Length: 106
Image (cartoon, rainbow, N blue to C red; front, side):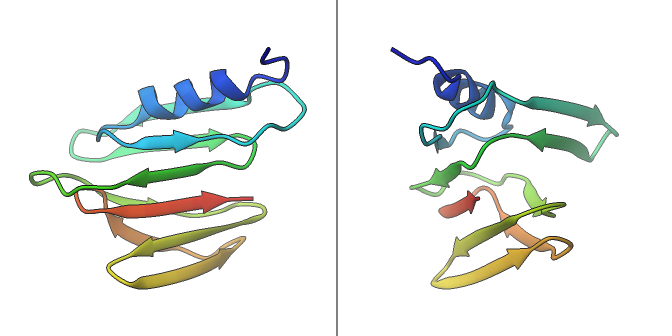
């Protein structure tokens, strides 16, 4: 039984993306947080407030968007093409969402 909203957070992450990917949300206490999106034409801005999660893409796809990740609090790890960036609050990383990637927060 999912009493803490982990399944809802995972579903929110999968539905909020503009590229197919997998998302795993660990079991944590507290309700699902929020997702706000702003469509600026060629640029989509998403503000995600959530418990720690992992998002990944295992196989390449056709041309797709680039993603910019900016942790406001906490940290994140971005892995792509045998490279890894460990981010803390205020750091920025850019990755190609059409190629395999791994992004984790928490």
